[in-house]
Amino acid sequence: MNDTSAPDPTMTRIVEAVQLGQTGAAAEARELLTALWDEIGPGGDALHRCTLAHHLADLQDTLDAELRWDERALAAVSELTDERAQRHLPSLEVRAFLPSLYLNLADCHRRLGNPDSAREYLARARAHLAQLPDDPYGEMIRAAVGDFVADDPTDHRRR
Image 1 (spheres, rainbow, N blue to C red):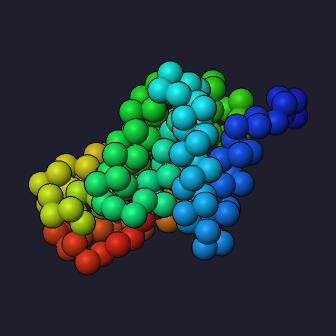
Image 2 (cartoon, rainbow, N blue to C red):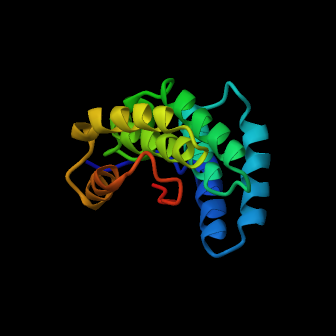
């Protein structure tokens, strides 16, 4: 099947900013993504909001800010449909987003010293592992969930 959909300029901008952040320009990437978030708005496209918030969390200077962005990503995914996600990439399934989103929330809560919340989100991540594809991404998330220690605030793995 050929994907005849037009490129999504907002996703392109998100990816470019994320790549910029991966080169060490975290502050610039954070500014670009924050400005884009303001453009998208709270009622904007759920795929855009989920993707942007998920990546913007990793660029924050404080754990509290990181947690807020991880929570925004989870809230946005609840509004996302497979149909919308697959217009961007035909293989995407929304349910496969959940283990990573829950794991990131578990990680934030662990590092904030909230082991009960960390364990709760870790349990949610584990409950959704079957939704992951059998590919390198799925293997990476399964391994991270398996290795996660909810009570160890020195463990800073992010997915």
